[in-house]
Length: 143
Picture (tube, rainbow, N blue to C red):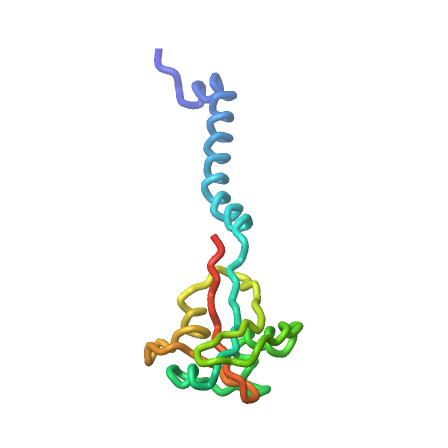
C-alpha cells in the first residue's frame, strides 16, 4: 500500500525531528566556527620606531601636527597617550629605537599597510615626522 507523505512523517516523527536538529546544529557549527576561531587568535600589533632623519629621507615623509595626527590613530595612541619607552643611546646611522606598540583591533589588511607602512602611489616606505622626530610603523602578525 502507498502511504501519504504526512502519514510517513507522522509515523517517523522522532526521526524527522532528529534529522532537523542535526541539520540545524551542522549549519550553526559551519557558520559559527570561523567566528569562534577568530576569538582565539590574538590581535596583530603595530610597533612604532623612531628613526634618524637620514633614514626617513629615503621614503615618503608625512608631517604630522596636533590636528592631522588624529588621522593615524596608532601614532596618536603611541606618541600622545602611552607611557614613553625608556630612551636608549643616541641614534647611529640606520638605527631604530622602539617607541611603543599597539594591539591592532583587527587583522592587518592591505588598507592598514597603505595607511602606515607603504605609500602605494610611490611604492616607498612611509615615515612620519612629529615635533622634529621621525617615526616608522612596523607590523607583527600574530597567528
